Length: 75
Ligand SMILES: [Zn+2]
Image (cartoon, rainbow, N blue to C red; front, side, top):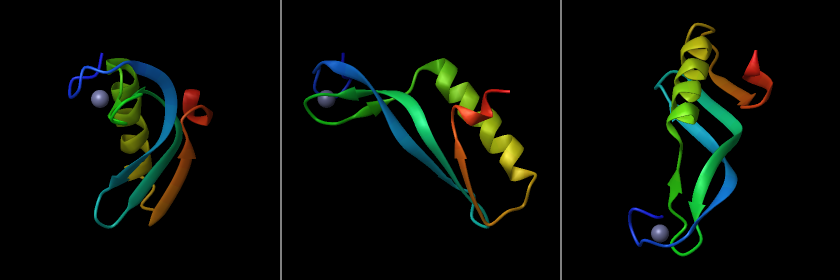
């Protein structure tokens, strides 16, 4: 249930972007829940943890723009 409008959440995928200032990380195909009424996106705790890991590993690469796929990073 959506925490904003209490609408129905459906499973979807989205592109998650993290701007670290000198580095922009774009993670594609991130599983999320999307509200069918207002479009609010929500990640599960597992996905949030995974995103943190991806950001951490990308941070060390010092690349300006990094585009990764959520599923490719499964290792
Ligand atoms: Zn909603």
